[in-house]
Each structure stands twice: as C-alpha cells, then as structure tokens.
Length: 183
Image (cartoon, rainbow, N blue to C red; front, side, top):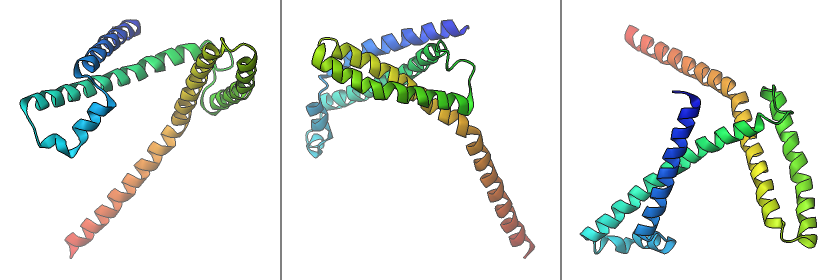
C-alpha cells in the first residue's frame, strides 16, 4: 500500500471517528456538569442499569476521542512535514542546522507578529481573528517541528546512554550472582 493510500485511509478513519465522537457527545449529553456528577461519590449510591449504560457510553466516547486525537496528531505531522518541506530555508537541512533555522524562523515570526496584531487591532479589527488564527497555526507548526528536531537530535545519545546503563547493570548483576554462587 502506498503512502498516499495510507494517508487517505487515515483521513477516512479520522473523519468517521470524529463524526462518531460528535454523535456520542450529543447522545450522551456530555457536559462538564455531567462528568462531575459521574465522578462524585453519590454516583455509586443509586447504581442502576441506566447508570451502567451511561458509564459504558462515557467510556466508549472517551476511547473514540483518544483515537481521534491520535489520528489528528498523525495528520498534523504529515501536513506540517509537507508544508515545511516547501520552505527553502528548511530544505536539505538536518540536525542542529535545521533546529537553528527553525528556532530563528520562530523568533522572527513571533516577535513581529505581536506588533502586527496590535497594529491591526487598532486599525483593522475585522482582520484580527483571521490573522491571529493563521499566525498561530504557522507558529504551532514551527514549534511542533522544533520539538521533533530536538527529539531527533537527542534520540541517539539517549539510547546510547540507556544501553550503557543497562550493560553496567547486567555486569553488576553478573558480578553479584557470580560472587554468590562461588560462596
């Protein structure tokens, strides 16, 4: 199966689960007050069949919501990767050089963005919500990619460090076991 077919299946699964989540939220009448009522100690006093069904629906709703969030992260990752691959300052860079370019772009976008938004608030207030949303999305995508770059940079040293600790632990256990057997 090609990557495009996998992505299409991911989108379809996400859409189905999202619609299912919305239906479950409407059916269960999910509210913060309802959740608080279920979580109180009085919930167990009059435990009935209808309460069990409500609790089961709440659990199903929770698991569908988790699946929607997991699929959303996969979709966001693919979209962010696709968008950032088209930005010339990020293409061909990996490791610390890419991280430096991303952090620089994040700072360059964040600082003037506040100035531009405050200017728009006073002069063209109708554009502010759209501009804020677009700018927030760009900053979110960059921040997400910065976190991925940091992870990729420290992944190998952390695995090496963990492997070294595991080897030291095995050696010390072997020495203790060997010493106990010889006595």
